[in-house]
Image (tube, rainbow, N blue to C red; front, top):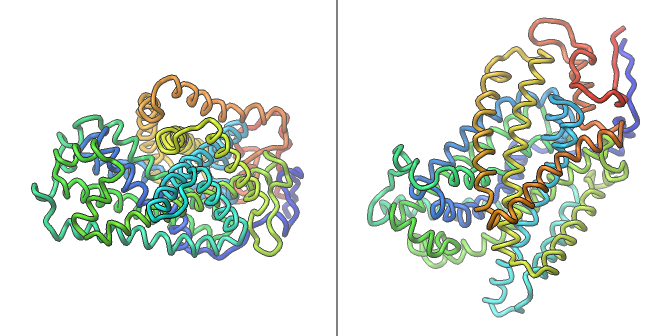
Length: 514
């Protein structure tokens, strides 16, 4: 008979601290692919990657990025069954590398997802204001439209997750559909004057220009695909649903971006595509749509770009809500922030807090008169890109350490080979991102400030570990490991032998078999 004890910080009252739902693979894939904002990436990042990345060879960067992230996903999904909490990055890092590193990853994740939301709110406010003004509506400042968008997202985030899932599903189908129509039109036309581009298939084409910057832009397009794990509590069968959704989301995103970027290059021709991207990056894809699929489709691309941006922030809002919910229920953040709504079974308190913080950030940007696209979007997206790559790198390292220590999974490919390849690829990506950070944020003066901010968010981990001894993002994962039979052939591991190292002051959860 197993006797268990745990600290109050890690054992919230039953029925008050859990989320519920019956999300299947399709619903979760909708959620995370929407967070990746397919039309926003195709309409914004693709022209920039062509212009200042590796030119006509840029589509290959999405395929290369997908391969690197596949290695990450193999270890990530292998660990999901041993991490029953919905904290994703922070929980995985904590389970593998220890309490302080897990706490550091939790704050870095919050910074990453909050800044990508801020970036998109800036872009959405400017784009929505422009469209409304063009249609004869009121010409209001961008931050007014951003504030209204935050309010709408807040309402949906407060309600049950199924409502957000349905909204995201409709919006996502629309934006992917219109891009595929443009892709098909280009293919049926045989490409542009030069025919179909082959630059992305040749070593010289891939290595042209600045391939490091191209890879950086490509990886930014995948932000959010790993968020499948944060919907664990609301998944129909989490041990199967989360891994399947992760692979499906990665495959859909990688193929979609690669195909669409190639179609854009083919529509113009290798040299002309670079010239067009340099001259008018914002309008390149709309012009492509109008030229090959007609004015109606071109107008539709403009409209769906707005819904793409909205779907993106709604999805990230849901992700951050669940991070806050998980951190509050593991003692990292105030316990009251981890409540779930009695009727909607949603992290409503976290949603209200995040809505307030987003409004505060937009108000701050407006007070300093920052440009919503060239400053708000570019700067905040830069921080998010670096944070995303660092979090995945830390998670890959944590997977290696976790399985080496616990031996709960004997599959060498899943627990050693693939995660090691992921570490190598992500370490290179992190170096490329940091060394080119000035290009993302407009100069080294701002870059240094944001690099310090990124590092500081992670260093909050050891500080909180010292100030809040009961805080442990991986407490549930440690308990789960203690009760999972040793799949390599041995008996179940004791917590003392398997749990990640923690500070001496940490009141750990213990379980002994008697």
